[in-house]
Length: 86
Image (cartoon, rainbow, N blue to C red; front, side, top):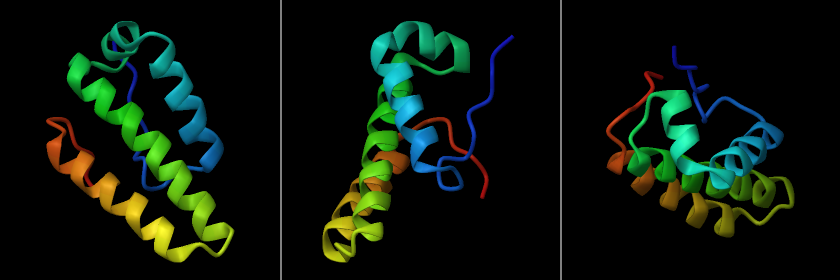
């Protein structure tokens, strides 16, 4: 049985960092755990770290930098084969 990933647009910065670290520690195990391809697990890892960075930038008032990270997230999302409904 695989676990479900939360919609990464509706989670906390802490959750995103935890997910990033989990996937980064062993991509293949995480891919299996969540029912993803290794490629998608890597995309989720990249999305999580970029989304967490974007959220931190917004909190710190660095809006233009946050927008850059959010654009990266948009590109990563469009490359993923597994997507969450909004």
